[in-house]
Length: 184
Image 1 (cartoon, one colour):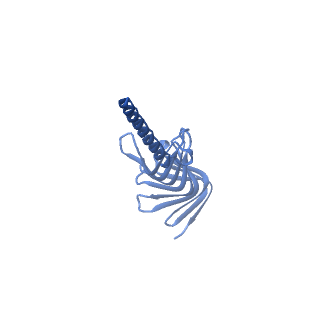
Image 2 (image 1 turned 180 degrees about the vertical axis):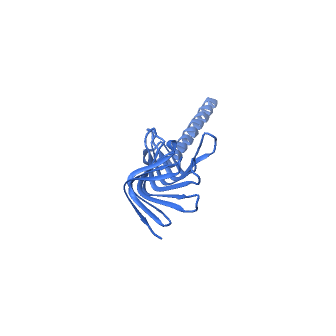
Image 3 (image 1 turned 135 degrees about the vertical axis):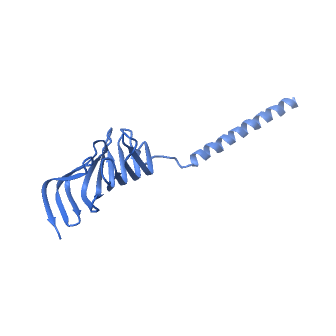
């Protein structure tokens, strides 16, 4: 009889010990901060670098972003974007903005909130553009906008509404209401 009582006490002690350990583990799990992604995104990246290669395996463009939020509909929101575009150009184009987004199912990048561009030309002059928004279309080797654009280079200032940059031909074209000012 004493043996049965001792066995029951031992089993009770083991069960009680398991329960206490289980409660401690449960308490520890609930004390940990719960991980979540910002703004209901399904994943996000900080300080990301995206590299796109051309058909020959050369770097076509490099995009750096401070934060990229990806959503279940395959859209994305970007902050502090810098697109360094090389494909088809004799030098390069750098286009930057504070904000951007990629619509669902697309690869085009819509930039807004302080869009600037910089393009060193082969002759050494640097073309600078400023606009409210622009689309970077890597699959079409194109940057475009319908917004007002100011483009400057040494000795010349061009303003107009709408712009297309053909990155294959390395040509910038303003579309409407174009005004050119030359300075010596």
